[in-house]
Image (tube, rainbow, N blue to C red):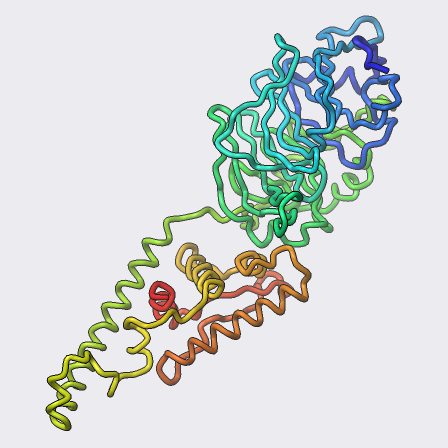
Length: 464
């Protein structure tokens, strides 16, 4: 049975209040149930399709999730009904399950989703004249979804940008390429179709990921429930605010379940289209405090600083090597004049193991070890900070593995680095990798290069 071309929905108090707004970003805080539908389709095969509401320009659009089926409301209700008409002519389903739906410049879009054994990052815009969806070319695909912990997506309507706090990586059709979350934060500029990487998520942003859930969106960011508090994520400012007073938390947790939500003008609105009710409670940025949490760590031109550090270290130690070579040649000339004039090169007699390592020699560290040391050096020189366990796991290639496997891999690699390092540094050198507890949360472990060993490590990594 085909979908009806025109439908009437009862003009409930929920719809009356909703249509007072020109445009809002609506979030559904719970799993979809049949009685939360905006419009009754009367077709059993589409009964359980989530109805994604998009309000723009005073018109309410309903997109049937996982399809291209799109209904548009008349701008003015008639009597006690609001009429919807189907505006698309599409027939293909199942290619955009859990896509992110939004409106940009009055045009309905949807981004990403899953279908036909593939996560995609396609941006699709609805063409009213052709009554079909068109692909908007982007500089790359970033697979996003609203179906799980990867659902941290926010539309900056003022500036025409989409912030994706996580992306889905991997391909089910390729061996050794499992589906996993990439925790880089990216921003899509809708005016030119360019994705830009903002940086890696901070350890705070990824901590206890499964306990975080966006509950509402505003013009400024996302309201997020996290464990036993409320957070306000402000992607355009790269800040995470924390609720000062825990009082509203209980209300939000109990009232919002199974409701459509949005924030506007310091108020949190929530309601159910079928029940017809809409309520609100005060919730604005002034009720949150900034304690220094950030969403991502901005990439910086740290390589120049690291290279300068390495060059300086090589210069200083090079002088020491030359001095040692000079004295060595004097010693060889006095003890064995014939050997002093040979063309075999500089002997290692009288030199330290460290001096030998700074010269032409086989690579000390393997590729994985160099990657970890480079990460620790980068974080230590870029932002003068330690490196989180999650970052270490990712660079070691075990980000999606079990905690036991991650711990074993970290231990093996760090033990190998420290063992090799002790073989080449002068007597009394420290182990380069330092493991410490986070000052704010003792459950978090962080890693760094010992400050007094950083220059030596930089030279070894650059020469490996």
